[in-house]
Length: 150
Image (cartoon, rainbow, N blue to C red; front, side, top):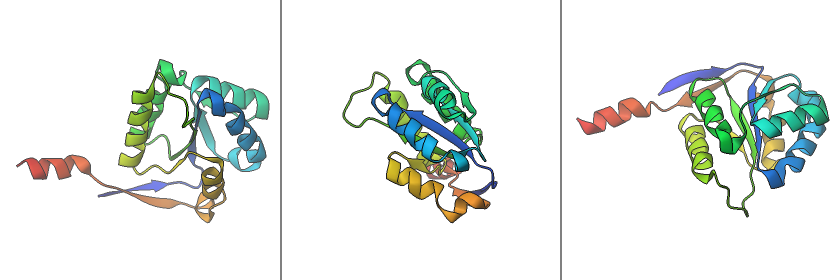
């Protein structure tokens, strides 16, 4: 197990499926006084809309179906994202569902907190941990797998 230290200024990914973009934009507007203190990134359209509608600076990746989910996942692996707010649509099948599942798997593998609803996002953002450093314990699955294979 390794310890990964999250700084006071967090790196937050903002992602939303089409039917949930308005909800995420409204949530970001309600919380922009907190969000503006952190580094923000997101998938293409979502990042663009949040920036336009709230004035928050959100670094945009590709659109989710065009590889943005995978870019977010790669940034989690590289330690460039501390947690993710992902307002997903549980009732609509997405053409990139395998990418979404991979993103969620990587998030759990690297012990990234994920909020998939407004209430969970509120709980995370209003947590006292948001204002301080935090030591995240990441399981070293690579060594765990190697030990079990020999």
